[in-house]
Length: 385
Image (tube, rainbow, N blue to C red; front, side, top):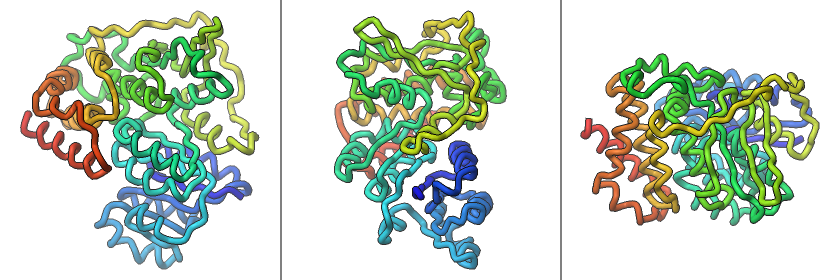
């Protein structure tokens, strides 16, 4: 039986993972679940799967609900670091589904206690890949990118020589405003920006899809994970979202991976990597999604944030500032404090501020440096507006 640690079990990726695992309790045992503050949901999950270790990050909720779990003989911790101090058997797989930069520290804390680490959130890889890579190497932990595009690239590159890569294309749906001019939607209500045409996602990532920020993050992520030159990675709009990544090789061959718009496919194929016996329930070739398929070059006038790809991403504070600025701007947009066009314009203006530019040649020395920069960005944005 293979042991699983699931970080961020109450979010959408976490729930999808549990839906896969509940069908096969013979092969897998969940030994750890974590949440920030959704105690009600994680309590039900722990009982359903017989999980004996829980992390609740929110200190207030942790103290408030400690006895609730104790009655069921479930051990509750306030952090991964606290859990890791126990003498615990290495898990077969840890899936980190915690959203945003908050997912970085738990990954760093759990690496020594897992054989395989699969990360679903972009921000922690973008901001802390330098530290993740160091820890992965130190503890000989295998890394699997769980984002559908990067899982596709990772799968396509098996057995391939990276020097044979001519170009990698990440596909983007174009979001809900693909056929709209930016000046027509500059004051659009957030409820319309949240209506992704293909995927069911959280609010933050839905806005990032509309602005194309999500795809910019994926380019940065790919540069780091696969150690490639940035000019070898491009973006193509594929409105049906059926093809997730395309690799053009120097030898004339082009490979791509296609699957339904569900995270079940990359998650399940990660979980069953060694067992190789997962059967997708809708295992029918959707050839209609390929008939008359169209790829579109993204228009920088519609998606001004694509200008961010002119920057070089070299593990400096630049990546942390971009992620933090975007988090802050999207939050303000969802709270109706700024307009949709302000996400684009403010990001590009703020990055040119001397206050931030002085950090673009500097690297954080540890995770605390990253946390401090995130705080600085949030304070600056609050004062700016």
